[in-house]
Amino acid sequence: MSTIKIKQVKSRIGAPADQKRTLDALGLKKLNRVVEHEATPSILGMVAKVKHLVAIVEE
Image (cartoon, rainbow, N blue to C red; front, side, top):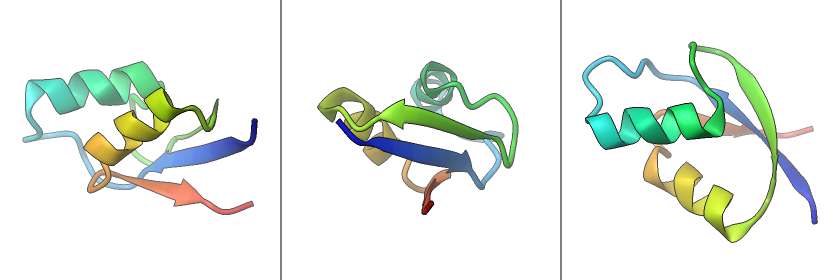
């Protein structure tokens, strides 16, 4: 499978608890951090849940 790079571009302050847990599950703890994951349906679903807080980084 292909990999995607996910970058947190907006603060988690004020976000609901379930979105904060999703960011933690993706490995995003601080602003402007980039993590790399396999593009599985579960990862893509998590990204869709917090799409207003993250961006997909093009390689």
